[in-house]
Length: 168
Image 1 (cartoon, rainbow, N blue to C red):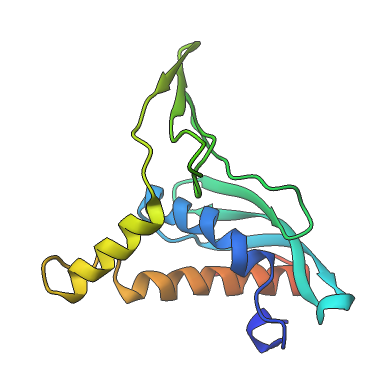
Image 2: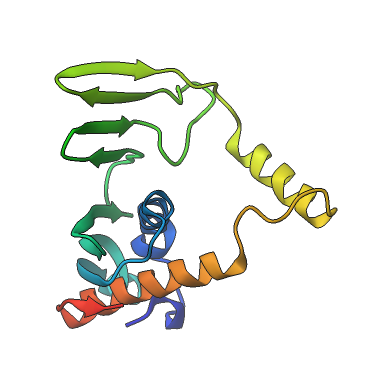
């Protein structure tokens, strides 16, 4: 069941799962080939997915594992695990005024903190869009990027609903 057809709309994949999915597509610079997702659909909320976890398979044997939920404690982390090390981003999608935007890199047994300036991402997003509308710069992301993300989210919902791996 696609959440867009529901009166409640939204759901965990549309509302918060979109962030790790978009991040993986951006970081890997490619589109996933398949999705395998499990979700909990709430009868009290017109069968909207309230929690989901899954895996997206990307070309080259690379995968994204993720979880998201409306019924889960707030988390905002991104972890990239590779053969040579790990990158941990504690405030990956939302950094509040009192949080840091720093992240950690661990390679060859050494962990270091990378300092970054704290910014208001919402202000920057609006400014960036305004500059594009005014013709001062091109759009940072083309509309096709949003359509591609929706295609992946729809495959995730289909996988959760049908309880099987879906080719994208």
